[in-house]
Amino acid sequence: MIRFVELPPAALDALIAGDLAGAGAAAGHPLSDYLVSESWLWEIRRDQIARDPASAEWIARAAVAEPGAVVVGHGGFHGPPNADGMVEVAYSVDPAHRRQGHARAMLAALIERAQAEPAVKVIRASISPENVASLATIAGFGFVRVGEQWDDEDGLELLFERSA
Image 1 (cartoon, helix red, strand yellow):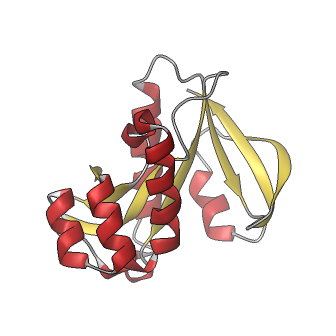
Image 2 (tube, rainbow, N blue to C red):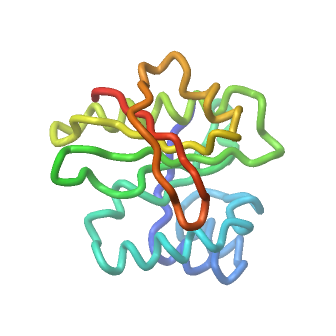
């Protein structure tokens, strides 16, 4: 089972600065070195929250595996539901914890979170065609390929969607 721990702006600032202890204190849960290594992402999310404080409840979360309360990665959404009721999942598993079912558990928890919000109608995943692990992760969750897009940072991405 996965539960998500919010990373408030103070935790994001500490992660960006490389202050793991400070980030854990701000989040209220010990975090992992893997989260510090993702400082580029926390800069994006910190700026996003500054522009749109309501997005904080949708993004920037540490993924904690239970039992054991071990941080195994991070997950959330790219933002709150858009005008069409679509949210896009985002998750990453620490390499030290891969191939143990955590990505599937994160995705299941994210889908459950999205389904709990009446404004969400569609859940999207965008995945590089070369990312075999992520393509396998979404299998069995009802996602259907709906197209593709070009991302300036990630290149070609396949778009998958499912009803909430």
